[in-house]
Length: 202
Image 1 (cartoon, rainbow, N blue to C red):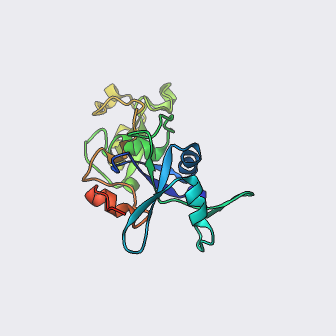
Image 2 (image 1 turned 45 degrees about the horizontal axis):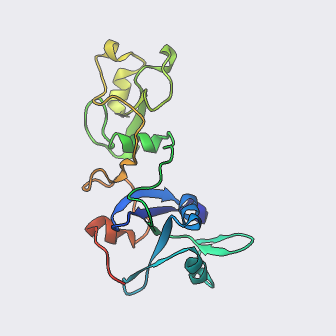
Image 3 (image 1 turned 45 degrees about the vertical axis):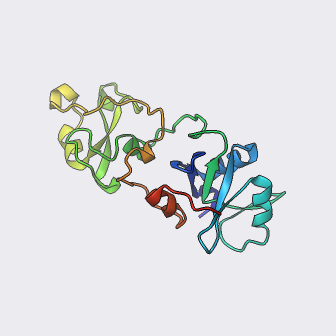
């Protein structure tokens, strides 16, 4: 995997998990001074590093998670903590299959049941062949059975209406449900924050 394609856990100033972002975004926040890297040693102690400190700490690192550029080699961070924000600075949320699932809480918007991602589809509320677009306002999470039953009918024709009116989310819904973690944990150090929400002192 390209180190820049890795995902990074984002903590707010209180060291509470608030998001997961791509490594490219995380590195950009580091260079802007909006965040610091949270590193954990073999003893489970956490320390923070601004970009200069993290570049120095990355020297000589042997592993696959190193980002190489003309000027520096930088170890891909697993966790960052925001310096000035409770959440990530506002950024347009990309319309994607996974983000629709996350917005809808991995719950079929017709039968109301939760499913694993592999058992879900996207449904156009107003079918495309009837003028419906592929957008936040017209696409919902649907299980295979409901998606098949609705087919290309309008909601009134199928007597199937979404539980929630679809809309573009104004925040990342990854941490809206503490008991439901649809995403995979990509680094062991994440578990400390996702399970306990506490911080170990350095």
